[in-house]
Image (cartoon, rainbow over all chains, first blue to last red; front, side, top):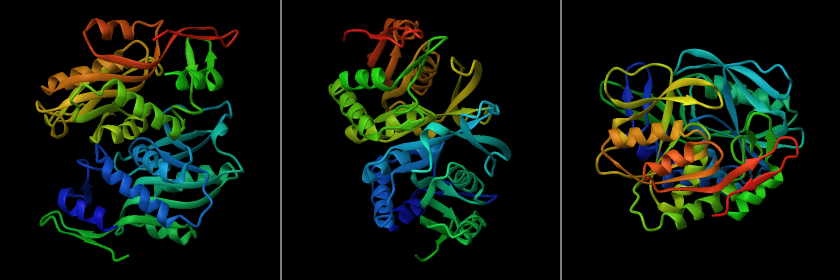
Length: 193
Length: 193
């Protein structure tokens, strides 16, 4: 998606340690006009799929998912990061490792809000090593629901997540895939799509 | 807002300990059509205010704020819950106590995204004891920005938060104010507005 690539080039900041800061428009301050264009693009990319629910994960996926959901006319469910293990069996849960925060945490979704009848589009802001996404896929599959597609705003194409998820046969579309980036020059190269 | 009150009566669940569960449409599974109606109502309520930014707090405020922001045509900034204290001076921070989780946590907003030129509408899903809201007001005031208004989806009118915030002179509107509720009968009484 050219609009997003141009915005990343203009306002994204490349930092040492493979960090791409897009906090001025994507995940701390949120440009809702851009979110709307991203939502339309997700709808175009997944137009052939029967989708009745969007699943995302707190916190920065929620805004993108909610704005996109308007183009699909479906509810959003967001997976919650939890510090306690739920033992009453009312939630699906999985453990994921955060690349950004370098720690493990439990992620849960209430069993009330996802089940075998659901055709799910997963949306998130970032794809790097793919841990969060693998966790969300696991939650959907545990519920007996189907993953119809996965829509990501920014994929770090030089990390393994995208390849792993595509190798699983998933219908994954990332609106911008960063092929390489250079903290010393600030240069960002996107994968041709 | 009648539509929200009716939805709370229909799908809200009153639990012991003054807990109102609205997770099927407001803060775990999210009804985006309802969010749109709430966004329009916030715009109507704050139409006379010059607002250039919406501030909310992760996680469940984000979706409401993003959908509402479309009616104001402004960006959203969400305050982040942080476990580490930032010592490099790049963020405004405050400590708040969670009613739900019974613990204190640090809340931060980058100094890049809020400043003296900003006229802020604060949006959140719930108002109970007002701790989160007082924290957000403090962040805005620390930044030298002005709080033009506060829009809440559901206020628990029998807790002190609403009174405290109104006594501060804040322009607070809650779309539904629960005057009382009864876990044994499930009955919910709303304040006339």
